[in-house]
Image 1 (tube, rainbow, N blue to C red):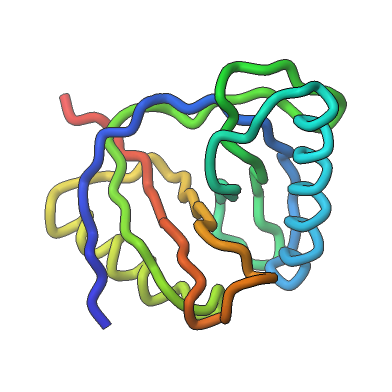
Image 2 (tube, helix red, strand yellow):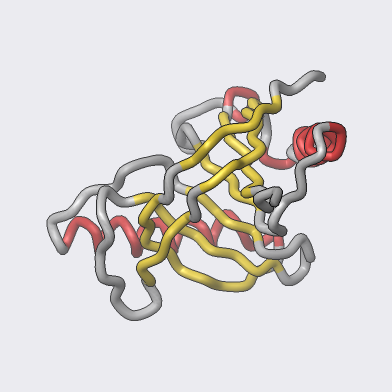
Length: 155
């Protein structure tokens, strides 16, 4: 399968998120719980989500993933408890859109990494996944995930 990989310029994006660690097998439960907490908090304070839910992966140890689970928000907001205010950094990103099961994401990751190498780009070490539709309402083979690697700025 081929993937459309591209370079985009991304503005900094305020977020509310929870930083945690989990094994890959626990992700559905962990993601659902934390998205729910953030959504409830945003609703309580009368604010709005401003985009698709995301996970930032700070490592790829499938038994001990270092994760940031969150939502973009329309403006900088205060966090509360484990829900922290943060920012997805602005700058250049290498991205690709993947359509299919979450369990089959190794192939688009490899394609994007190869594209970055072929085009002289270096990732910062964080990988973002933005979930563009709801797995509770979408057939598994139609799930849309935007994978994004923020890039080291060339000097």
